[in-house]
Amino acid sequence: MIPARDPTLLPESAAGYARNASLYKGNLQGFKQSALVHTLSNSAAQMVYRAPLGSPYDYANSVWMEFTDPYTNVIRAPVIKDTYKRYYFFSPSNVPQYSPLASIQSNAAKLTLGVPTPEQAPVVIPTAPLPPSPKTATTTTSSTASSSTTGSASATAGSGATTTTSSTGSSSTTTSTTSPTSSTSGSSSGTGSTTTTTSIATAPVMETRAYIYTWVTSYGEEGAPSLPTVVTSPVGSSYSVTVYPPLSSDTSGRSLSSVNIYRTVTDASGNAQYYFVTTLAIGSTVFNDTILDSTISTGTILPSLNWTPPPALQGCVAMPNGILAGWANDREIWFCEPYRPHAWPVAYSISVDFSIVGLGVTGSSLVIATTGNPYIATGITPGSMSLQKISIHEPCISRSSIVSSQEAVYYVSENGLIAINPGMADIISKALITRQDWAALGPAKFCAAKYSSSYLAFAKSTTLGDGSGDNGLVIDNSSPNTPYINIRFPTSVTNIIQDEITGEALLISNNAVYQWDAQSSTSQAPYLWRSRTFQFLYRQQFVAALIYFTLPTSVTIPTPTSATRNTSQPQTFDPTKQYLLFRVYADGNLVLTREVQQSVELIMIPSGFKANFWQFELEGQVVITNFQVATAVKDLGVV
Image (tube, rainbow, N blue to C red; front, side, top):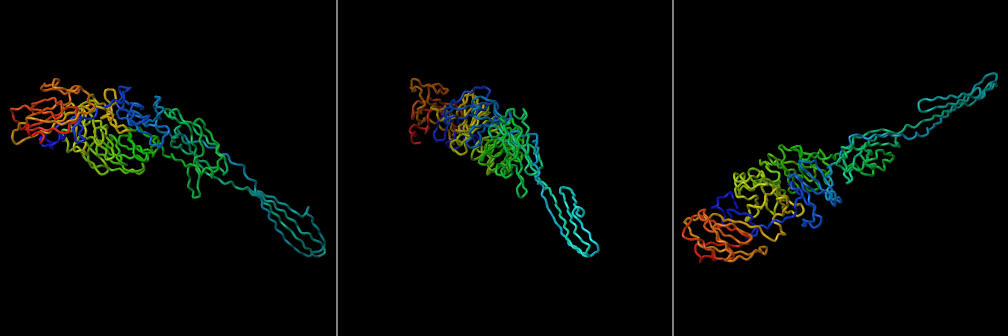
């Protein structure tokens, strides 16, 4: 179908209208019947996610998660070989959450994502070591004297020696003086000496260090640290570190299990880093730190300085390199630490000019669909994301219409189907359907998924606004046979989901989940295909037709016979009794409805009139490879 063109101006083999017609092989057949893969346990569920327990395609042996919020995003842990098999949940109606598969299977409550930051700094009390014994220094000074005199005199140490002791500050000094001996013979000589002893107390070498602590969950998720406590004490001191236990508001909905203590170590260049000291159980609060710097500095440096919990994210998508991207506060894009879904540093956030509707991923780029211009954020790390505003002004009108793929991110606007990638931004449906006809479909209610190379969309809980009674469509610019096809699912579609494991499109409808065009299905959905309108310069009379078809093995109805042929004009196709109906329209009037029971069965068209405009319609469940109409029976087979 190419609804943008007049039915008389379509290419020769194009359809004026096609419903449930799979034309990917160049023949005409129906899509395979959808297969029931899960019955909802909650009739209010509008979103599902499947975690297979065995084979990826074993839908029965799977854990099915059901959500009442249709905008819930579920992401498997980006951690390689995650032993816990964690799943992360983001939606507008809940704070970000996560849960290991075992807890999901046991219906345990989900955990709140992120690790809180301790509000109080630790208490650190140093105990200085005993001071060392003081050092002593001794100094001796000698002197010699001679003289002549009359008489005689003598001196002894008891009367001529003096001892002086003085003490100031942290040292003490002792001085001893010995006087020389003299006689009265007229001359004298002698030697005197002074000895000084000093006691010096060594001043202690001081050091300054800071302590912090973090909380850690039972899954090894670590949060941002507390405020630091800085202390100065002599080298060799021991430090009593007291941490504060988490409050009930910190532990509610979380699995906090331990406390990590860190302290600074300063290198020769004067640079300080926080190094891991020890781990305490979450109930313990005191640790006596006597570990040497040389031991600590060989350990782990604090990794979680800015690892704050995520804000109230409205949705989230997974990017390459273990990065999750979500949005909050209407216009802010947030990124997690690579492979750390619990850590969302504020420094990684960026903002756009319009309210965010949703996100999509193509390659290593994040497409941000907004109420105004779309944006692209590109980078291999969350701290290096560059933001580009796309010049095309095409607001996204349906969050559920956003589809990620390798080649582009797709979404619907009022003007058509939009495709965005780093090298392209375009309305890819503009050659297929006019802006007015597109708007009439009601695209604001579209939910969509990728189907092979196609964009598969359904109108949520309603039908398309084109009056066809159909409730879905397929758009595929890559295939000349299937640019645009209407879809009619037998019951109203609540939502459509892309199965993460198989890539299959899953429909939620009538309290159940169905696999669209299921490969395991043994039957095909009935289709209807109507040709373009053939216009001739002169009025024409078509008199006969031939249709070449094969019967799929899945069609097991009783073989129709001439005795059972329905000859009513008009009539409705009955897949329980009929292979195919062939209809002919002349100048817009239905002139023939024929039940076709055999391939290459000669079909006679009523005669006695001519018409300028002719259309031919096929409705059935067989595989048609060719059909011919002619103005004379003899021309059939050579057309």
